[in-house]
Length: 102
Image (cartoon, rainbow, N blue to C red; front, side, top):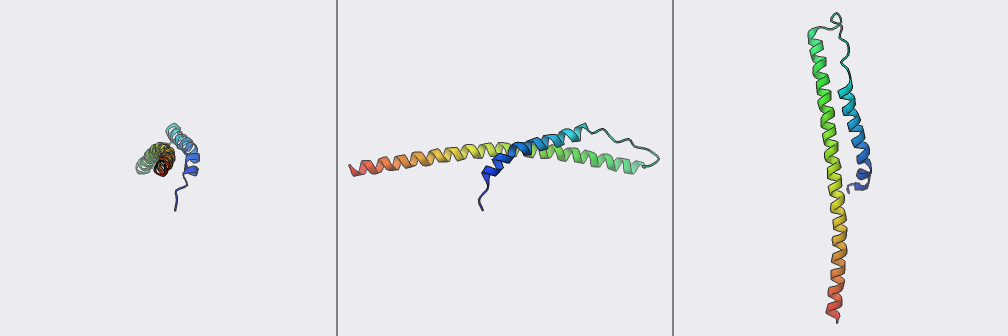
């Protein structure tokens, strides 16, 4: 199954924007007020661990989006180079055939 590079290239900016927004939101959320009467220490500690895990996941998603963007740029450059190589090869073949005919 061919990879839809055109769609990937078109979606990379939106993926980066969404991942940056997610990371920004996870960093800017103030900790919710904890009422000691409602939550015991174990629950508060677990909530803190879950929030930290969510923040790390947002950072990881941001890093992955950046890597996908870099990979997409590299693939686009390689695709262009392959097109130029194919054109140069075609010209070389035509010139070789003309040289052999004369």
